[in-house]
Image (cartoon, rainbow, N blue to C red):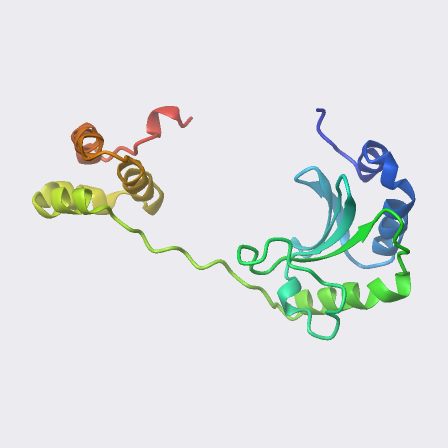
Length: 196
């Protein structure tokens, strides 16, 4: 699949949604938001912050509100794409024969822009690192290794913790710990050899 570089190409790629996409794009063009293609779809931003995105799928099209959790005046049409997973993102979905009323979606767009101007943003909370017992025991038994582990970036620490935790058998965990001890001592990440 070729990379989409313009909104026009996006509409052509999703010809089955041509009329609806053109209507939504027309509404977005009347705002102060800047249009671009991100993740292969139209995204509209304000001062470099993503505010709204459009998406065409097999059975529906959607308007995404990146900080939709803050939409309070206009909520009747909003859905959470992945209940329990999606924190800030909300969307309005339209199926094939749905009538898209500009009058009904413009208030959502205006509120999303106002919220962005007000700086409302739900930031992801970093997850705490859970170190498997076997790795914790080795680190606690070797101060130099423990210091080297804590000197690693949080991402590298997480790679090691996951590498040990995902092993099902105790023998595999033990072998993996023996394998990573020299890497940790050298200040290397588990996957450094794959990084450029």
